[in-house]
Image (cartoon, rainbow over all chains, first blue to last red; front, side, top):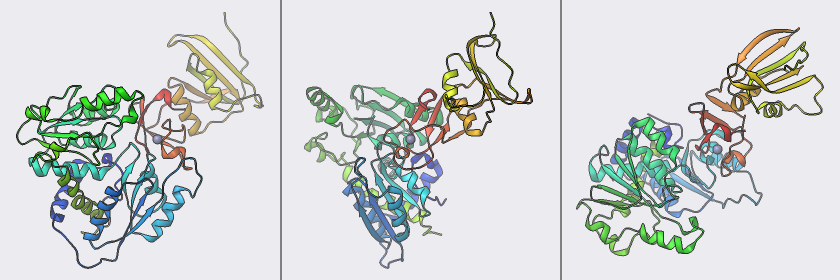
Length: 300
Length: 145
Ligand SMILES: [Zn+2]
């Protein structure tokens, strides 16, 4: 199944994803003691300590050395071109992990040099390993993804995690409910695409009703999206999960979040056994080990 | 009433352009005051098929695939007649290809193609919607130029 790079969830079909999830399971408790003589470079043009650490941990557990190149991208300040940076680091490493605020940056990077690239987030576009770890988590808790009732709640327009997640969920036949404030709905072309491709079962709502939900997936609603701070506050309050909403929920509901979370989840929710976002984040490690190992052909 | 335009010896005639798009087609072909050949733009001509249409005649102009793709995007109904020695030697109906290479900039200001020197690529989803190969956003045909 070996892929050249992992840039977008659109590059994967169902079999590819199933293989990654299976491989990840095998890596759950895997630690390689010896170095295998490979180098993984993380190039982060915007800060994301969490993602960067996750990739570095995955590499280390496979016996791979890591390099870290952190430069803040600025569209106004002229510096070395992105292309040059990528080419230089490509000379030092066997695989590149790229995070960049511009959309399409990772795809571009995969074309200007020969080493495999993993997209660790390009603007509002894609973050495929996040989607894989989300699917992995759902499968771990629910044993399957097909016909699982999942509610995506929050800013579905700008949240990159949601855009690729809906694609993965639709591919596996989950029942998807979208709940978002007015103006922050999922782009219609994304919905049209998954309906056409996978005949996805999607319901759009603007009220929170968790009674039939198996998985609640939350993401942030940023204040900056609203011009009126009063309006922002009101909507944040309205779309924050609270114990009242959860009272009506199933006992085995799981609550997921791509992290970092700020104040969209009250502290008392953290304490519930339903809140699994920290183990979700931990699942990023075996999933990224699976992707790195595939792209480097370690299993061959 | 009819308008007679002189025949051209060599060049191209672009027919069946949607009414009002003739000027745009001329712009795509870089026709301006410096063009040396004979140029005719006829607008709002009666057409059996379309009601009204525009026609562009360009003496001395040659075609390549990129120009062809660009015209397809703004005037998907157009036909292009290639003229040699006053005769139509080739007649082609434009068609939007599956992959549009370097015919439009990406309308997404956060797309990498607007920052690095790279040819844009758009994947034709259904002749009306196009996905940028890099930023993966979907655009309507009218947004590409
Ligand atoms: Zn683009």
